[in-house]
Length: 246
Image 1 (cartoon, rainbow, N blue to C red):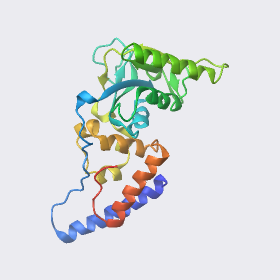
Image 2 (image 1 turned 60 degrees about the vertical axis):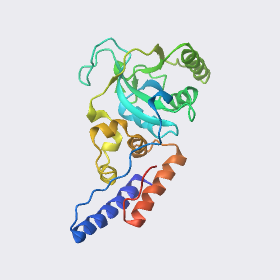
Image 3 (image 1 turned 90 degrees about the vertical axis):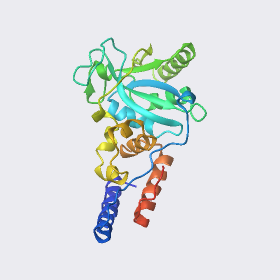
């Protein structure tokens, strides 16, 4: 479903819902459940990557099966408590919390390489600067080995240019300010209305928000993008907020 068509369908849906509210003269809130399936934090693993603007980077990973939460932030530098307007030598990064029973670090690396140009020096597309450099952050020797192997494999695809991606042991990760979390989703007011205008805390921690952030940016794998299209179409057909997950 094209983004223009999706927005038109959502607009029609929200118009009908608004009329229903007026006729019923009752308080009403559109709400989609944001709770992922039960997983303890102890069962999750984390990975951190830098691949350009963290707005897009967060959307890249949010839709993947097995990814539970994503957080935009800063890593790779020495400045304490960096901020968007004062991040020092940090890179814009994304922290990915994932279920290792469904997706592993090697698969996340594949998404990392396919989602940006690792041969561009200190930047991605029009975003140029040290904060947009390409980095794989690792936890322990095994992740460092897998990262090095994947970089070597990426380099063999073309010898005419150098893969500039750095591999660093992860130090501190600083979450970005609330306005930078799920940025692509926040650019879609109709989707925000559809899910009930989540709190800032929910935007950072919600599995649903992570998936819809990727969907809003049209960066989900095609199968997942179509599945979410179908869920939204189902809501529109029923003219009632029945969607509980994607």
